[in-house]
Picture (cartoon, rainbow, N blue to C red):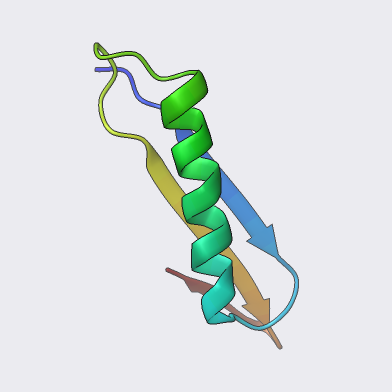
Length: 56
């Protein structure tokens, strides 16, 4: 199985617009790189707030 993974790192607190930006990147990968033989693209958004890491 082969798929692309898009990872976005944010140094600040999570904001809802971060998911929109990640979605934009996922769509670009799907349009420009991914083939029909590839599994769905995976998006990972990591945000740091104080000393906690939040993954969404």
